[in-house]
Length: 370
Image (cartoon, rainbow, N blue to C red; front, side, top):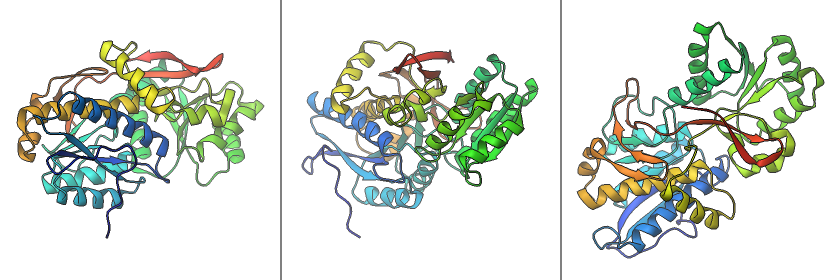
């Protein structure tokens, strides 16, 4: 099978380059908008490494493969990139896809720095091959549950589609909320039309609805239906997975997309490096960069640091995860072992609950931090 070419803008150098494989969702059914932000961060990181002299004088090359939110396609891409001689892998946004990629990378002994996927069980067994920048789902979603409790919500509905990721998130919420007397009601977003879902919400007596569904469908139709239903005027709509982070959310929903709290992995204030990278990413994307773009940049910053100290030997790269200490755009990056997490995990990634300001939808309000 012929390998698809790297997309325009990917670094291309000669055979002396140090190569990093990049897994990115760039076509549907993948969330291509998130993939474009992730790729922008990866590419900016590579460009800056090469502008600074590369890796011991050798250029860094990004070899990009589109996963399209397909676990089998991602696993095949890992096999291909391993044959092409990449020193390590970076990227991936979708948790279920990252899980397939991580399992294959582990089997091949290929280091994988997962930038954006949060599923706790990224691999079935503990592995030294995989490290992760995004916070584990259990950490972020418990923080979101604390936000709901603090806002007085004790009966919470979730509009959910079948997925390991959504099921995991529901379990985390239920386990964290139950000791506080709060309950979670599941509504099947595949079986219910938006109108029927509104009827079920009224019957449930829930004070909050969480969107554990894909974007734009069925998330956008559900939000529109809820916002237009007078019976649900006081209902909080939330999206812990971060759908409102991207510009398309505001474009498709306008004012209806504001005041929907979601998880965002940025600090309240960026430091000098983060501010400089934000400016560069904004120019590259022609819009405000999402936290996913920063995750992409930070992945390259970590891998470049490791490559400079350890070279391109895969075993040495994997062995270096516990020794990483890199200044990223969102804080100092260090990896450790966390109970219940099978991969090397950034110890303290920033986590916020934010929403879009109804008075100014392109502005984000910080509602809760952890």
